[in-house]
Image 1: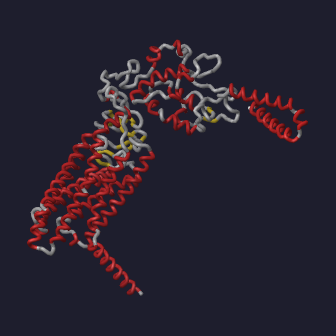
Image 2: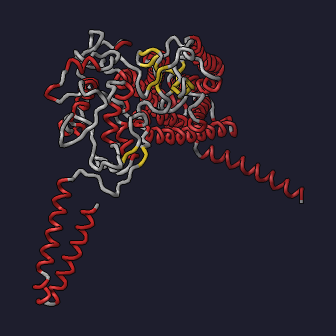
Length: 588
């Protein structure tokens, strides 16, 4: 800018004059007129720069618009920074993404042009002043979109205040408006009814009356909701067999894979969290099984169910590890239209079915083996049954119940096509998008099994005192040792009830609030009259659920690590090393 160059030159002159004045008083007197002139030039430049405070700098070159949302507007060149001090188009694009839900809803035909004209302003080679949108266009957009924002408990942003923009036809400040002049009159002369009638019809909302089009603001019907980001509409052809493909009661609407509930940063951490604990769970459970195979006499009844619990949770860990390593595609997510969506209420691929069996079937079987463990402990402590009695009378029934009951539940899921994908972990299970399935197939069995475990555990603890008296009379030397063993086993079973309790609590949390989460994302009219605010799920609750699910494969390993187990492993390594050394000697 020429004024900038003059200002810089004047500043150098004044500085040089001050230096000369300090050296020679005569020269200072002679240079006073020149210093006065330079000072006046500086003042003029400052005043001009202040009057043109919004004027674009010469150094700001025009550049092609790269913001995805603004590719359809009438111009394609912009200059940065914009009026909001966004230095790059990438920064402006991140701000514009916050308005993506309104753009997807289509609350105003002028919305995209209005937002882009503010965040990526037009750049013209022969016009140096800013060219903002007109106040009339801002008021039209606000009139159509603000009522929908209010349903989400959001106010019209202060940075988009219409009072800051020039009115249409202002002779001192040019502005842009993509509507005919007859409809873009000034604020004082605008026709509100005409503008309201031009607002697009948003399903479930009447902008003119500010209420639900169904007449009942609080009724969560399909007509009251729209399928907007992060949800997509499933096309009819690909969803022909999914009569119940809906999320939050919106037909043919599915959440986009990896974009629901939480940010990408949170989902990335959740994948790391699940991957970590699934590997730890599988490894510790595998070590427990190997310890049993090394010394099978170490696990008589009532301890034998610990081996099968470890087997079940090793499979559960593998089920959670598969989507975390291979990705959600083809497992918890499926391809619909042009994006991948979370699988809901369909049979799924063979990989999804296999993952479902690993996660759901073995998880339920593990819970049943916990019931069997507490029942066996009750038989041992309360009724005085020994290893032979439990094996002879109960072992077969244990296996029938532990493996057949989960198979019946899994078969029911397949017959009702209720299998769906977990939006966070990516596993195929049930109850991730349907609240009734969450109660029937997940929460109700888990609560039942937990109550049975606690009942048998309490009955066994109540009989510990009586067992102590019997042992004192018959085996006085071994009384303390047997009593400590029984109490240790009871505490072990009780401590492992804690993770199951946390998992049930997390499932109930999802059941109570999931519909509110989903409705808040794409149902602008469901909560109008209830007075409730938009709620989002707690990220830490989901992390806790996955951790408590997988930690049960680790806690079983605590029981086996003792001096006897270490001694058995030492013997195995000694045998292996001795055999390896003998083979090496023969080869030499």
